[in-house]
View 1 (tube, rainbow, N blue to C red):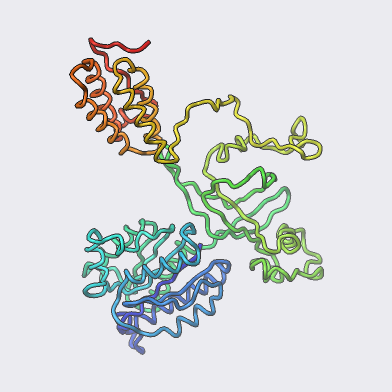
View 2: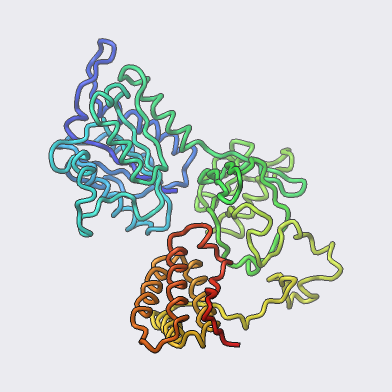
Length: 493
């Protein structure tokens, strides 16, 4: 998960901070000290993650593009210059541009905004930006929420009491809410000093950058591994009492399956699994990138060592997977996350099968698993790929509406088919529009029309309007609108 560090270099960051009667430091110096601490931690524990450094005041500047070179990031921090007033909105536009150019809009990203909590003044200030959110055209939209998944962490080089003396904290909380709420605001505790800023960034590291260590088991072999990025807990919405599901620190390889059988499954997230070596010599290459794994530990280094799964994994990567990695994909919790594989609990070794499911010459595959009941593909499934298809279905309903009551059953059959499709797609507006059309047809009925026609059209329109409200009683997918019983009823046989 890439990280964007957004550093405030406005004049307010140059305000002095007295440290126990010694020389004066600026808030910017405290911020730089905290970021150096973060970069040192990432260099040791998150070496495979990409990080970029941006600075902002009224404008923004990309200081270091996405890189794994934390020395370059720290060097750029030591050369920061001071500029003018704070404009967070402009900086967030810059973040959006930089991330999308490098990663597109599908890659999740973490944004670390380092500021003193000053909102800026006048037009361009955060206060002004938030007050004018609803008064903007499409060409001047606020950059949040970002078009890519984001966690926003706001690091304030100020304590909570200072921020609450003004409306700074309220505005920062609103900024976090607009971003999606998936993040946190961190403030300094106690006096502004080096110790406090270390504690501040320490809380960020514990929350978002703590390494995920686990043990990977394969048969009788096991190895300490680190997973990148850290797997996040997920909550299953369908549960009565949703509880966060977390990944165990005991990872077990229970079997192997052909890549072609897995295909391209829908995943929650993907992670890189790297072995952590048990001796110093292997550790120097065991946690690096695949390009850094070229140099294998010598036989003398491993002589007399007990068998270690890390050595097997390391040797496998070096010899066979020069440009690949051991990846872990997380699926939705449940018995059948990939329907074509069947129930996960039913998978087992080939040796336990009555006959080889792949055939003697690997000419066949047991997947996809066939359902116990063969589905009929003759079912009339409604699909609207083009506007013309939707228009045809609506016109069919109107044609039958004009032939009521002779076509009552056909009218309601087509009406329910469209209703179910609209509910399945979440197309609530369609139900309201068709209801309006039916009411219009009712007003256009000629004097010679059968009295039952007006009753049926009004009844159908009312039922569609109720379904369009989303009310659980009337918008149930399995519910069907039935003809209204009248003294004039004369339905087709």
